[in-house]
Length: 276
Image (cartoon, rainbow, N blue to C red; front, side):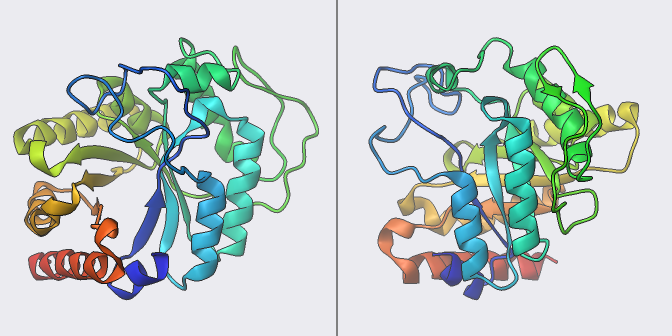
């Protein structure tokens, strides 16, 4: 799939992240009308960092990353180590989309507080880049502790580490992106895409980043679509590019095979090329 996407013109490849599912009813999924996940909890869900390494080995130039990694349910030192390793082995092609997470049962099964995930997320973003120097300073926060004299070698291939794109649609997510991220990763669906709402979100992000200082953040939109909506992806991607998004991630119809997915990717790439 990664090789087919790259050959069709994709410039980056990403995977979502769940470590586990809990087999009981969930109603806190933020992207469905009833709060229930839209997939079978027994579907195969490969681990995100392993997938990134595998895709990097199978491709030549695509950037590889997560959209998004549920940061507060992982150890910050392990995240820093995994990311630095993949970035080195891929020749500096890794990016990390990161988020606070929505799945209470998963986070608590892994031993982390769901209620405190936002504060833990903030602290992890604050220390990740220091971890990527290879010799992070000691840190004692409310939720994260890094002891003195830690060595994390090798550091990433990219100076400063992989780009951090903060995912989410809420004001809190935009605030995290403005203060700590290199960019913002928005998410939406073809059938419910609201251009006016996205224009407002971009304006809010600009205001927050101006208040925080620093350069303008990269903006990425992850556009989901059911297989039967693949023909709508090109027009939606162009609309998002015209709105000001720097990059659009599309979900091609893999269920229909590699050829159908490749045709969709090529069509979106062509439409965006004409837009440029």
